[in-house]
Length: 165
Image 1 (tube, rainbow, N blue to C red):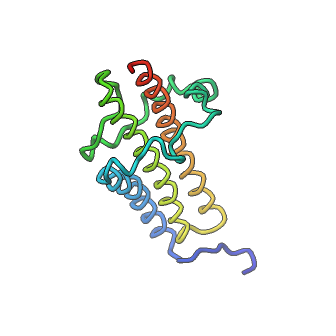
Image 2 (tube, rainbow, N blue to C red; image 1 turned 135 degrees about the horizontal axis):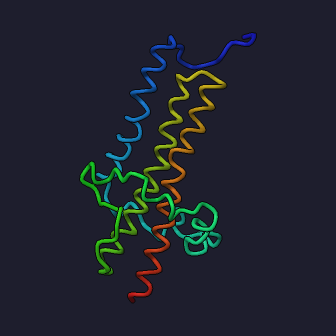
């Protein structure tokens, strides 16, 4: 192809821009909406996907490396927008509430991983290499802070739950 860009679906630049402007928020919000409607028992904190890893050191790694406490309050919680569980603040120290909160951090983590995959679907129409690479990086960077916040919060809530027992 001698220096031309490659994409599976070729669109004029204006249509490409408009499609991305509509698709990216729709992917974020649509996946959030879908995950909020999934049964809570699909998000088991003891599953290998959600279980704490040794290197996380009970969530301390996220504070030591990323200084998460300094910026976590700036992240939006879309769950309440769709009637889901608000995770912005701990409202009570009842063990059942804390268990529910822990499950909701699993739901949030799964939703953000799905959003990364959803945004990667835009590679169908975004030209390679530049625009496609931008989308790959955007998908990771826009969800990474939310992913580590879910893991950090879950570790802290698990410690609190253990202390209450």
